[in-house]
Each structure stands twice: as structure tokens, then as C-alpha cells.
Image (tube, rainbow, N blue to C red; front, side, top):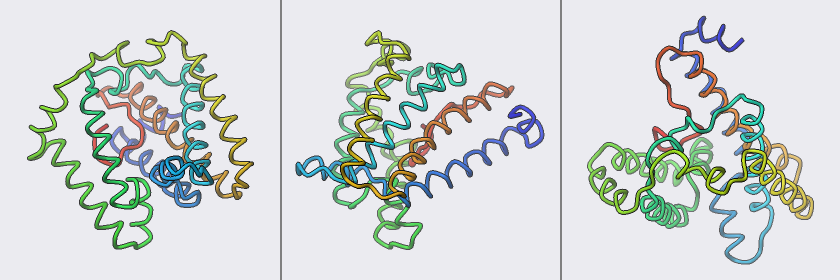
Length: 240
């Protein structure tokens, strides 16, 4: 069926349509559940975990479980994703993660939350989102790219098994699925304990499934395409 859609629409339009549908779904579910990494981190750091942490944990567990289920079903090959196949940088992850953490606290929202609030007309979020996007692109291909390359070169990891936690730990994708199910059970317990409203449950599940859907769709289209297409999930900054 997917091959028929790709043939009728063409590869670029099929990817555009898939991205639009998944993006709409993610935005809707993230808005309804109030999904936000910053809020979850603040609750955890203050020692008062509540509904925001439950939403994030639920979405995380659903995305891991659904993605690993796709792998075990033979519908997705994670080894082809750039995040595993290409050389990576632990120094870039550490420095970038620190800057991202500081930035989302100062901006009062992670990238996904800023996007949702900006779409609702929040001027602060629109300004923060624009600055975020410009700096991200400057770091990727612009004036900050040389500095990014230097920082990324401090500590690199070759692609393949070296970047694959499933292979490094030797647990297999069955073990990774079990890991996701354990966290899903913990999320279910915590959500019930926090009396998460119906839209919190629905939105969290939808947010997590949107991530897995993005992996599956890009992999499926790449599998039936003559031209190479990157296999990727949801990104707020550019090519992932």
C-alpha cells in the first residue's frame, strides 16, 4: 500500500505528506497533554514529581516500546538511522546538552513546548523559538559551524555497534522492548497515582506513538525509493 502511495504521489510529496500528518499529530497530542521536558525536569529536580513527569515518562516509554516492537516485527531497521550509523560525538552531546538545558530553563520551555505555545500565539515563545531556530541553523551550517566542529572533535565515537546501546549491552531488541515495557508499567503506575486526566493519558500515548510513526514512515519510504532518503524521527532544529 505504501509503495502505491509513493508511486502515485512521488517520493518528495509522500515524505511531505507523511511529515505533515505526523507533525500535526505530534503537535495536537503534545498540546493536549502539555508535554514538556523542562517541566518534567523541574519537578524531578525539586523532589516533587507530579503530572508533568508522568506525561513525559509515559510518552518516553510508549515511544521506546513502540519503536522496539517495530524492530522486532521487521518493520524498522534502527541500524540504518544516522544516529547509529554515522560517527557521533560525546563531547558535542555533553556540551550541547548542557547548553540546551540552560537554554530551556531561561526560555521557560523545551523546543517542543515553545513550538506549541508559539502556535497558540504566545509572543515570548515565538521569540524564543525564532532565536532557537536561527542559532541551531547557524551551528549546523552557518557561522557557528566551525566552533561546533571543534567541540564535536574532542571526543568522538565511531558509528555502528559503538553507538548502539542495544549491541553494547548485549540485550538484543527483545531486551530493549522489555526495558520499554518496564518503564511503561512505571509510567502507568505513576500516572494513576497522579490522577492524570484523560487527555494526559491520550496525549502522552499519542506523542510517543508519533515518534515511532516517524521512524517507521521514513524507513518504509526509504525502502521503496530509488534515491536515498534519511531515516529520522521528529526534529525541531533541522536535519537529524
